[in-house]
Length: 248
Image 1 (cartoon, rainbow, N blue to C red):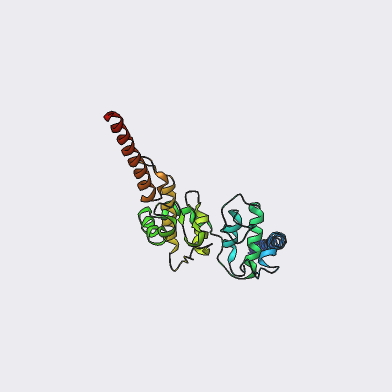
Image 2 (image 1 turned 90 degrees about the vertical axis):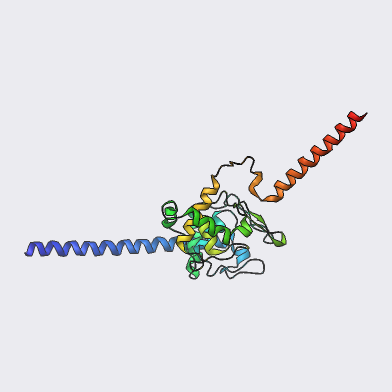
């Protein structure tokens, strides 16, 4: 009995010590990431967003935007940008994924905000519904991003980007942070399960074949009408010229 009790106490002590060590190690690594993120922020972001991310005359405050906003803006290359008066466009990121994660950790440490989506978005194929996602997309997103997710023009020279190259994490981050002119779709407005359905529909639209012939960009009846008008008018002119030539 004494031997069993001694073994139990040793095992319990080792488990508690290991858990404490792991927790301390995790806290230390997070602290290091925050410090690294702050150094990157001071060098590349503070000139517009302020030394303490309080914002300025040309850039908003980042206090409370959360790690998801940083991961979306910096991870897709939209930030940093040279001209803050134009809409940020997706381009090659200026920082590595590790540096983006560090800046996100620093901004998240300033105040509570939306976190970077986790592994739950991976289950969109299993949990999402394409039919429901299409209905939700047409109700909440199609007025800006086009009924086929091809993007579209907005007022004051802005635009809604195409979704044909978007990945699940980027889609969720855009919905919960509301970048540029996009409104915020919190979990109370569109539930996490509904977000997975929207992702599933977008991913299906990305690989959908053009069964009816040339897609013409899938931007609606304007291009189709323009093409029909141009070809039809050209055909009529050609027939008129041919008939005039035959009449001679």
